[in-house]
Image: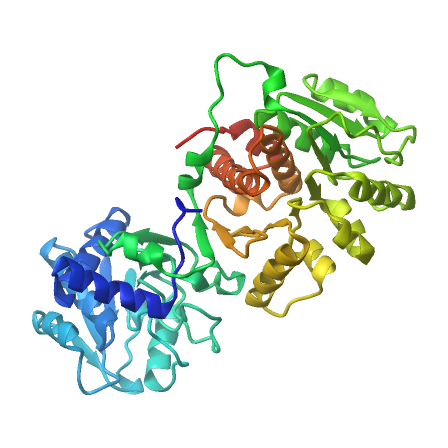
Length: 495
């Protein structure tokens, strides 16, 4: 999707640097200066002049950034102590220029010279940059251990030292950064769940690399952010409820009617014209009193759904939240997958049923949207040892069965039948609460009913779901956040 930024690999980052230097006629030293200024601008709102700041730099260009940052902060009257981790005799030329501009740098050349960084309030890590390709050993390992053991606020320049950009680390010797300020693009590895300890948070800063050149690089990985809102279709003044689709949501069972309520309400909040919720009899009064805006059909069974209603009069069908895996419900799912000739939104127990019945995968209507969390996805495709292995399985599943997979996690990933993977940037840890996924199902269903294509519905739904969670967390805090708060904060509109 052209309006979303690509995530590029290490070789492509180097090419972008070189291309920018050539095209714009700037020197690599000037580019280093731009990056250092951007870093300071990003962290300065988090600082005050009473803090003692240690800036720990290496001998390469990342270290050059660190020395330039030290000089900038000193000029602004911050209390700064620069360190050089000298694991080579010579410094890169740009690094050396910035190093020579300081006269109070403490040089670390051995384990015995590793300082106690707990004496400082803030540590800025600029030892290694994006080019690291092997594990950290020797006295540098002790430097990183000292940084981590200090338990102080740590800001990483571009990437935490010890972290690879394109693959998982092969050692625990990685700086544990509270914030990584990444130049121009986040690194692919920032999205790996295994790296959450090393990259607690990140933000990108523009250092004026050539964006057109970056977007021309070959990549199947994209950043899902507010730019996706540009594809929202406008809601015309001269329209009516029939203009925005009629969705059927099959949800709920005894003890799990909350899932039906949450997904139904979220569907309505997303802008669907009409919604019919199909539920077991036990949920009739709950649904009618909780959501008067939704129409309600009940199954003949009291506790779970067993019979497929007439499906062809609806624009979009969704199934799964809270339905359980009863044998008769399983037959209903099989019938729906077999008979539907338009994309379905499939969640929760409907995914578990498909996982238990391998033959249903090949019957999935083309461009259906599946919304599993990690355990549900592992049931569907088998367990993965690493997140990168799981990403690969996600892409393979989307390609093989021509469907969209929304893999719910801290950074939810959306895979397309074309082989692209989108990493969401909205959302927060407060959304790790029961019912949050039911809300997402409702949002995607409502967007699909309004004639957004399935992939667009998934991308928009995931982003707005996360953004609503962020807005709700701002008011409620992470611990107090519940799924209903996400619905109440939902705003489907262009940024």
